[in-house]
Image 1: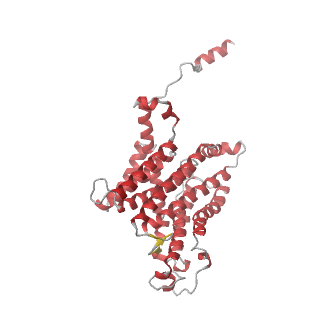
Image 2: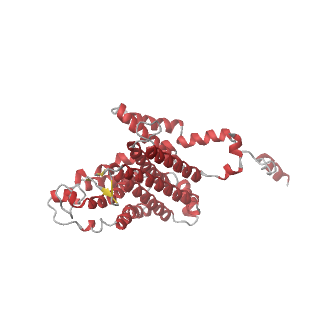
Length: 390
């Protein structure tokens, strides 16, 4: 093991290489085992598992978006569920238009809920929703525009800390109440559902579910690469400096609000992409996705996985989501208490989360060594003595 850690090839690798490799191996394994083995085989991966893994990867991309602003810029957003839901609604609008005259009421132009509510024509903001390119644009532009408007007002007013967290939560709560209203034209309490197909392929087909899983893995790899590039760029280092000492950054001539708005918008668009991929895999989107509790749960994923480590956010989202799937089936009444207890234990015992535990183990296996020919820094005592002699 130590030989592997000390090999020159291994030391050139970074977290981006490892995450891409793990995603590629996982995707390949799931695809091959789903297609090549028959149900009942030990190696067979069921269609249900494929859909479940696809949903976990959407959550991982969402956690990555939150870690980008919270872990690296110190913006504790409790409203990222809003960006996730907006991306989901953009995809939902496109999927509703694909139903056409196969709905309950057989209207080729209006979704069933609009016919039920006696709407006679599509509202203006649904125009173009049957176009793929318009849908893709809306997936990024909707959350990005909201983040830009909200971020510009909040960061220019120097709202930060707990006050910023509260207003982000107020934002998603206000959106939830708005989308519950039938007058909004998004299906009210029931939301958008009963989807038939995507890009001409049936959503009930196992091949479509597998393709969506692969697409989500590719999107997560893309999101990780973008985030990795940002945090390792000069601009990313300024963002990290803002997290650690915003006043000093402002003192040396930077304008922190510009950097905050920029990274907040990028994060919102990643969350919108996660929402767009989530909707066809679960088959519906409703105002419950705007719930403030959902946004708080995302923060818990990041805290448990390891704030400030991109791969830690992915680990946290997958581990907690899997635990939720298991424990809500076994003991649904106490699951939330268990999640709260897990959050407290990780905060107390593992302040850097699961990723911090991994880093600690790796450091024990491969402790940092100082090169023999590197000059030793003089001790403070010696320096003081030399200065006094001079």
